[in-house]
Amino acid sequence: DAGITQSPRYKITETGRQVTLMCHQTWSHSYMFWYRQDLGHGLRLIYYSAAADITDKGEVPDGYVVSRSKTENFPLTLESATRSQTSVYFCASSPDLGSAQPQHFGDGTRLSIL
Amino acid sequence: GQNIDQPTEMTATEGAIVQINCTYQTSGFNGLFWYQQHAGEAPTFLSYNVLDGLEEKGRFSSFLSRSKGYSYLLLKELQMKDSASYLCAAMDSNYQLIWGAGTKLIIKP
Image (cartoon, rainbow over all chains, first blue to last red; front, top):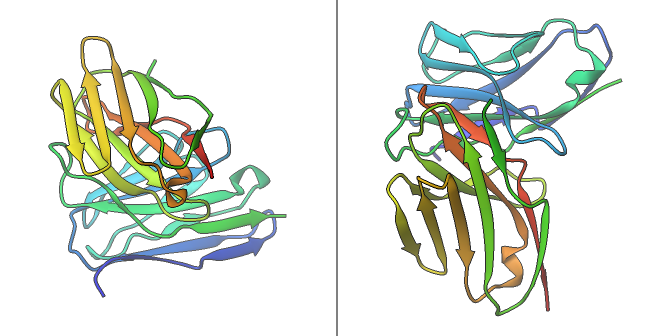
């Protein structure tokens, strides 16, 4: 089925470790986004991408790295995980920005850093 | 700065009507989105407003007043499955979404 999938759904790791969250979409949407969701906060944008090999920082990019070598994949890497990065991470995609183009979300990755 | 305000929690009765308010302050404005998010699940798109007025979509309606920086989501004939968080998000001049923290709606029988 077409859609947007994230893996893993759950991850527990230790501080200082590197961890990569995967995101794959089958719609051929140009735009992809990474958000984190924490209690009491709205979704906060970490990074986004307008196309393959084009990425840009969002509101909270520190400690994260992204790449987009193929249109359908947009992995997010925490190079040296910290406890403050414990969160629920959502990947989203949209065909375009603006107009009435909603973002479509994956099911999320629940990441715990001990 | 950019800011979205919405109530943290609301309670309503099955079969009733509830209105969830959202006020926003953004650098530029390119529309207002409402999403529904059930506990432990992904946000799903409900509505989009860019012009003043009311947009109706079945039991759900969304209203926008650009001059007041105000929107609301109206849910009619509430069902137990409507228990969820409702997220308001405004799109700024850079076409980035600024999200509210969400309103948790509790439906009682």
